[in-house]
Length: 370
Image 1 (spheres, rainbow, N blue to C red):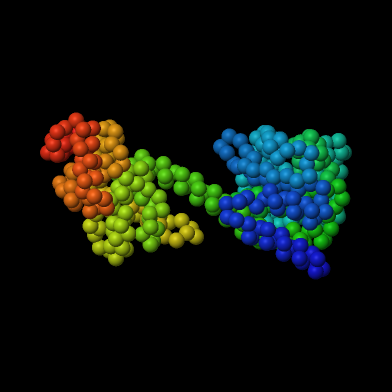
Image 2: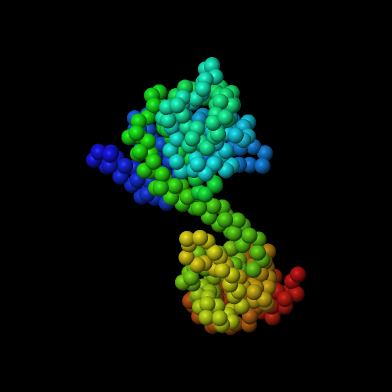
């Protein structure tokens, strides 16, 4: 590899490795690969293995006479009609001989007469495919029948592919490759082969981030369904996420979470009846699910529900909670960091919205509420 190709390889690796997290690297990489390989087309796609059908999970193109949306629709429509084998590989579990390896082959055409596979290793992928010699002709005919029409419809029949199946163990992360009319040389095959470790690492990271996003959404929905305040807490005691009840609870107990976590990590009981459960995510620092337990949680849930039904503001709901615990206006003012006169105004509004005339009547109504 000459110095120019070494620089090109370094640029491609940098593109893969240094792109901001959360930004899909493939759309840019497909165009860069096409240019680096002196190819006419660039393509990357993924396949989701559903219970009823395959689906194209993503499609990125370069050099095609169609939009990405059109290409994705084309591919998804074709993928959905196919089951194993899918072309020369099984997307549900690619053969070990094909995982994270570069493959160079010519696409079959619909009108081409059946021929014996060429012995030219550049255009005969059979050994790398792990297909026995007696199966070669049958497989080639099968792929020509299944894919020839589709390849012709998108202008790829009889063109030469240089591609890799980027995998995480047996799981396919994506098909990435370039396409042109003439066979690819040793230079292009070497460049693509050198990119596999970086691309595999990047696509694994992107897959983990997508999974983490789904898990976060599921955890968030579960927490929101809880009646008691709940929080996701970092190992330093910072609240990374809270449900609606938790956000209201934090108005008066933000500092208590970190203190309770310290006690939990030392094996001591938490003074505010906070229960912690470790959340384990690969490659992520320890996090904990914290929930307010027992009578404290029940009382808070009752106050929060009554505040909503009476139309109280967040601050008025907090004042109600402290009134129920028997705190004086002065104590409430200290907790809220405001003037005692301000607390008096809040108390007056709470009494009016609850339609009672005294604190004792308010407390009684809270405890008698069902």
